[in-house]
Length: 338
Image 1 (tube, rainbow, N blue to C red):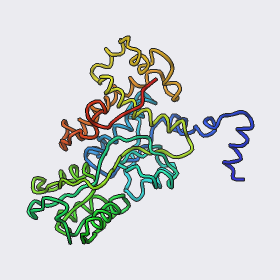
Image 2 (cartoon, rainbow, N blue to C red):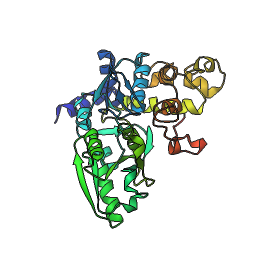
Image 3 (cartoon, helix red, strand yellow):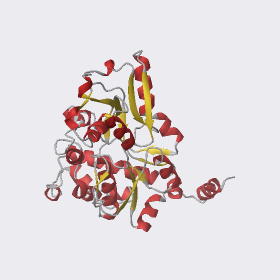
Image 4 (cartoon, rainbow, N blue to C red):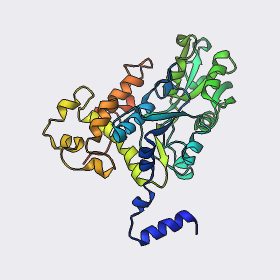
C-alpha cells in the first residue's frame, strides 16, 4: 500500500474526515505567509509585469483576491511566470498553489493532469490576427496561409480542426512561447497569428503599428479560461472557487470597492450573509467572516476587475460580451452565498 493511501486509511479508521486529511494547502500558504501564484510570462490584461516588476491583470487580480481573503493583504503573493509548456508541471509539483494563467478548461485537462478547474474567469474563443495589407476579411479566405502558433496549447488542435472542417490547406509555424510567435508574425514569417481572441487584442498592443493589424470576425472555438488547483485538497478547491464566485456575486449584489463600507450596514439578508454579519459561511471555507469584504476592498467585484484590466477602462477595450452577468445578457454566473 502506498504511504498516502495508508495515512488516509489510518486517519479514516481513527474517525477523521477525508477533508481533514487532505486539507493542507491553506495551512502551507498561511505558514509560508505568502500565496504562490502561477501566471503567464506577460499577457497584457491578464498577467503582465511593469518595468518595476509590479503585476497587473485579470488573472493577477484573482490571485490578489485569494491573498486578500486569507491574509487581508493582496500583496502577500509570489508571482511565478510560466510558459504554456511548464504551467501544469509547476502546479503538480507544488511550486505554485494556484495556476491563474489564461488556461482553457477542457475534459482532458480536467482528468489527466491531477488538477481541478475552479471556475471561469473569462469566456473566450480562438481567432485570427492578420495584417490589413493582406486585405483578408474572413478566416474562410485563409486557404494556403502560413499560421504562427504557440505549442503546448489548445490552439494547435483547434486550428487543425477548423482548416480541415473547411477543406482548407495551411502551414503551421510553431514556437515555444507566445512572444516568439508574435515576433515571427510581425516579422513576416507567417501570414496569420492565432490564439484566443483576448490574447490577440493584447498581443496587437505589442506590435510597432497596432492599427495595421485586424482581428478577423470568426471565433472558432470555446475557450473558458479559469484557475486550477491540485487534486486532493477539497478545502483549497472550495476556497479558490468561492473567491471567484464572491467577486461575481458582489457585482450582482451591487457591491463595489467604493461602496462596500456603506453596504455592510445593509439589512438585506443576502448582503448580511455575504458580509459575515449573519452566519459563519466564511469560516466554513477556512477564512474569516469578513472574507467577501476583504476581497472587494482589495480588487473590487468581477465587473470592476474586468473593466480595469481588459474592458472599457483598459487599453484592450474588449466588450463584456459573454462575460457580462447572466441577468445582463451574458453567461457569467455564480452560485449564491448562502
